[in-house]
Image (spheres, rainbow, N blue to C red):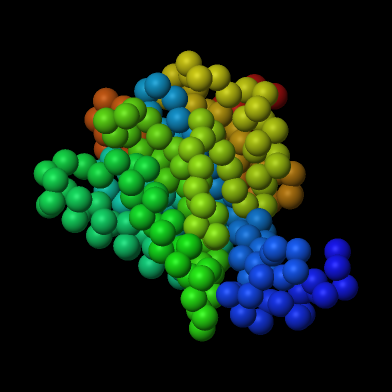
Length: 242
């Protein structure tokens, strides 16, 4: 690295590139994402599964800690990073979804809502006096194109995935997905794989298996949160199969 590319000289303003072409504020935001609770999204022909770790403190009420948001009936988003930033972006995604329904009389495409949120995130990397959003989202849903999963980056870029993960346990999850994911999986198999990925990611960091799972079946196109009892059943099944 050039001696002039030290972060201290170029990370005070989001609009200034370092001599080697880096925006340090964006990289700092991504580092925040990489340290957050693990989230994942997996698609299969029968639907989409979104999952997240839930780090709930002893005295905290569980219903006020969540990382999976309902954007529209057919679209959900899992978030990692600053929950305050995520709340603003998911609220904006909901507005886009309702506006699209009022304007075109049809549900918004998953990629369209992802792109519009990424447009906002990109704008905050290009103007002075602001900072990047310290959050990444995995959008999942079912639209006229089929089952879709998209992952976003604090810079405002997004990519489509068959299965992906973000957060502290990403490497563990991606390793399992590369070995066990199949494009012809059933929704039931996909749910079990999502639970396995998150449990293994937590075990690798010696944390208790507290997770949330949401599904969007291709048939109903309606987001459903699995109950804690259902998820616990999958965790016990995973434990008994070892």
